[in-house]
Length: 133
Image 1: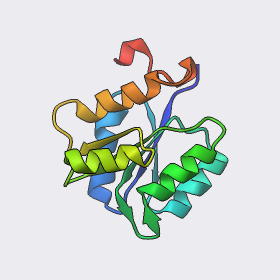
Image 2: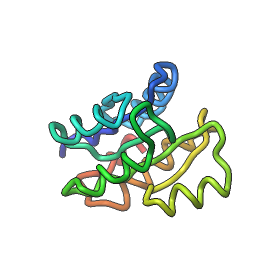
Image 3: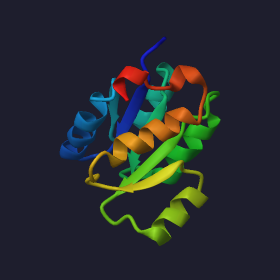
Image 4: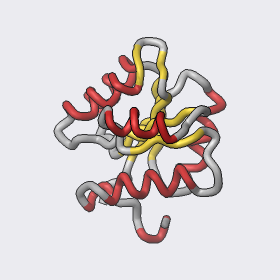
Protein backbone atom coordinates (compact mmCIF):
# COMPACT_ATOMS: atom_id res chain seq x y z
CA UNK A 1 0.00 0.00 0.00
CA UNK A 2 1.34 3.46 -0.89
CA UNK A 3 2.13 5.90 1.89
CA UNK A 4 -0.49 8.59 2.30
CA UNK A 5 0.74 12.10 1.64
CA UNK A 6 -0.29 15.45 3.01
CA UNK A 7 0.39 18.87 1.55
CA UNK A 8 0.93 21.58 4.16
CA UNK A 9 0.15 24.98 2.62
CA UNK A 10 1.44 27.97 4.56
CA UNK A 11 3.81 30.87 4.00
CA UNK A 12 5.26 30.48 7.51
CA UNK A 13 8.12 28.02 7.84
CA UNK A 14 7.57 27.53 11.59
CA UNK A 15 3.96 26.51 10.96
CA UNK A 16 4.99 24.13 8.17
CA UNK A 17 7.60 22.54 10.43
CA UNK A 18 5.24 22.37 13.42
CA UNK A 19 2.51 20.61 11.47
CA UNK A 20 5.03 18.36 9.73
CA UNK A 21 6.46 17.20 13.06
CA UNK A 22 2.98 16.21 14.25
CA UNK A 23 1.98 14.48 11.01
CA UNK A 24 5.28 12.72 10.27
CA UNK A 25 4.68 10.64 13.41
CA UNK A 26 1.54 9.31 11.68
CA UNK A 27 3.64 7.79 8.89
CA UNK A 28 2.59 10.36 6.30
CA UNK A 29 4.74 11.70 3.49
CA UNK A 30 4.88 15.49 3.87
CA UNK A 31 4.89 17.93 0.93
CA UNK A 32 5.07 21.72 1.30
CA UNK A 33 3.54 24.63 -0.61
CA UNK A 34 3.23 28.30 0.22
CA UNK A 35 0.72 29.43 -2.41
CA UNK A 36 -2.36 28.28 -4.27
CA UNK A 37 -0.26 28.01 -7.42
CA UNK A 38 2.34 25.74 -5.78
CA UNK A 39 -0.47 23.56 -4.43
CA UNK A 40 -1.94 23.29 -7.92
CA UNK A 41 1.44 22.14 -9.28
CA UNK A 42 1.71 19.49 -6.56
CA UNK A 43 -1.80 18.22 -7.28
CA UNK A 44 -0.90 17.88 -10.96
CA UNK A 45 2.27 15.91 -10.30
CA UNK A 46 1.80 13.95 -7.06
CA UNK A 47 -0.77 11.70 -5.44
CA UNK A 48 -2.11 13.67 -2.46
CA UNK A 49 -4.24 12.22 0.33
CA UNK A 50 -5.00 15.35 2.37
CA UNK A 51 -4.32 19.10 2.17
CA UNK A 52 -3.80 21.10 5.36
CA UNK A 53 -3.81 24.82 4.59
CA UNK A 54 -3.81 28.27 6.06
CA UNK A 55 -7.00 30.27 5.84
CA UNK A 56 -5.30 33.05 3.84
CA UNK A 57 -2.50 32.73 1.28
CA UNK A 58 -0.56 35.32 -0.74
CA UNK A 59 -2.35 34.47 -3.99
CA UNK A 60 -5.76 33.48 -2.64
CA UNK A 61 -7.41 31.66 0.23
CA UNK A 62 -8.53 28.29 1.48
CA UNK A 63 -11.50 28.59 -0.90
CA UNK A 64 -9.15 28.42 -3.88
CA UNK A 65 -7.52 25.31 -2.39
CA UNK A 66 -10.94 23.71 -1.83
CA UNK A 67 -11.79 24.47 -5.45
CA UNK A 68 -8.59 22.78 -6.65
CA UNK A 69 -9.22 19.76 -4.44
CA UNK A 70 -12.73 19.27 -5.82
CA UNK A 71 -11.38 19.21 -9.38
CA UNK A 72 -8.95 16.43 -8.51
CA UNK A 73 -10.24 13.01 -9.55
CA UNK A 74 -9.81 11.74 -5.97
CA UNK A 75 -11.54 14.70 -4.26
CA UNK A 76 -8.78 15.48 -1.75
CA UNK A 77 -10.09 16.58 1.67
CA UNK A 78 -8.93 20.03 2.81
CA UNK A 79 -8.34 20.86 6.48
CA UNK A 80 -8.03 24.59 7.18
CA UNK A 81 -6.12 25.95 10.17
CA UNK A 82 -6.11 29.37 11.81
CA UNK A 83 -4.99 30.92 15.09
CA UNK A 84 -8.50 32.42 15.26
CA UNK A 85 -10.57 29.25 14.82
CA UNK A 86 -14.02 29.58 16.38
CA UNK A 87 -17.52 28.20 15.84
CA UNK A 88 -18.59 30.91 13.38
CA UNK A 89 -15.39 30.38 11.39
CA UNK A 90 -15.93 26.62 11.48
CA UNK A 91 -19.41 26.95 9.99
CA UNK A 92 -18.12 29.32 7.29
CA UNK A 93 -15.12 27.15 6.35
CA UNK A 94 -16.96 23.81 6.34
CA UNK A 95 -19.89 25.42 4.55
CA UNK A 96 -17.46 26.46 1.81
CA UNK A 97 -16.44 22.83 1.28
CA UNK A 98 -13.49 22.21 3.60
CA UNK A 99 -13.39 18.90 5.49
CA UNK A 100 -12.60 20.54 8.84
CA UNK A 101 -11.27 23.68 10.55
CA UNK A 102 -8.77 23.57 13.42
CA UNK A 103 -6.89 26.01 15.60
CA UNK A 104 -3.15 26.43 15.13
CA UNK A 105 -1.13 25.59 17.07
CA UNK A 106 -3.02 22.34 17.58
CA UNK A 107 -3.70 21.05 21.06
CA UNK A 108 -2.89 17.48 22.02
CA UNK A 109 -3.39 15.14 19.09
CA UNK A 110 -6.02 17.32 17.39
CA UNK A 111 -4.36 17.65 13.97
CA UNK A 112 -3.50 13.95 13.88
CA UNK A 113 -7.10 13.04 14.78
CA UNK A 114 -8.56 15.32 12.12
CA UNK A 115 -6.21 14.00 9.43
CA UNK A 116 -7.01 10.41 10.37
CA UNK A 117 -10.71 11.23 10.15
CA UNK A 118 -10.21 12.76 6.70
CA UNK A 119 -8.30 9.71 5.52
CA UNK A 120 -10.94 7.39 6.98
CA UNK A 121 -13.72 9.02 4.97
CA UNK A 122 -12.08 8.13 1.70
CA UNK A 123 -10.96 4.88 -0.02
CA UNK A 124 -8.82 2.42 1.94
CA UNK A 125 -5.60 3.29 0.10
CA UNK A 126 -5.79 6.67 1.83
CA UNK A 127 -5.96 5.19 5.34
CA UNK A 128 -2.98 5.53 7.66
CA UNK A 129 -1.65 2.10 8.62
CA UNK A 130 -3.09 0.79 11.88
CA UNK A 131 0.40 0.48 13.36
CA UNK A 132 0.83 4.26 13.03
CA UNK A 133 -2.53 4.99 14.70
